[in-house]
Amino acid sequence: MKFDRKNHWAKVYNEKSPKSVSWYQDQPNLSLELILSTKVASDEAIIDVGGGASILVDNLIKGYFTNLAVLDISKKALSITKKRLGDSAKNIDWFESDITKFDSPKQYALWHDRALFHFLTDTFDRKNYIKVLNNALKTEGHLIIATFDMGGPERCSGLKIVHYNSEKMIAELGDNFKLIKERTEKHITPAKQTQNFKFFHFLKI
Ligand SMILES: C[S@@+](CC[C@H](N)C(=O)[O-])C[C@H]1O[C@@H](n2cnc3c(N)ncnc32)[C@H](O)[C@@H]1O
Image: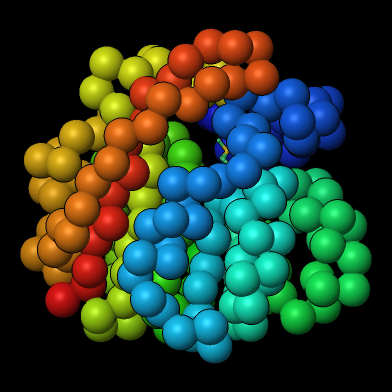
């Protein structure tokens, strides 16, 4: 039977609490540090793709960013985040979409992805993600993308993933992206497992 991505993620967020999933962070410190280091202005457009129930968007609101969007394939994940934000949710653009099929209504100054891209094990899906990224990110826009590092876990949420180092990520993204910096992070899951992540900051040229 063909894998149904939307069903998989619907089941995950319907059956598990947001704080129990392996990717849960009580503070997305490295994401925030990298976003702030880009010096994007507070009114520039920022999108968190595969944002899930992450509190990154809460932190960006607290940091006075006013032009925010969150995209996820899971309606439940988005509704958890919207509920948590209350009234502030009204000022955010919400997209329930598979990123490989997303038709962005506008261009962003910053695209953040923690642990979505590495699920794309199919070349065709990765090509489509990068096509969407190229259309949706403006020239001189920032890409902050985090995946499992080489030698990191083989699976996430029961699904096979692809590991990246900078060479692999550069080859995947193509000529429009210049690597600015990379960082490693040891993420400790709620079950106290260590997961090695790689964070990359690219500039679209
Ligand atoms: C491992 S979680 C990471 C969530 C969040 N970025 C974080 O750091 O807490 C991956 C997220 O990507 C979403 N996702 C997976 N594949 C997707 C796709 N093709 N398009 C959009 N969202 C997707 C899932 O629903 C899930 O919320």
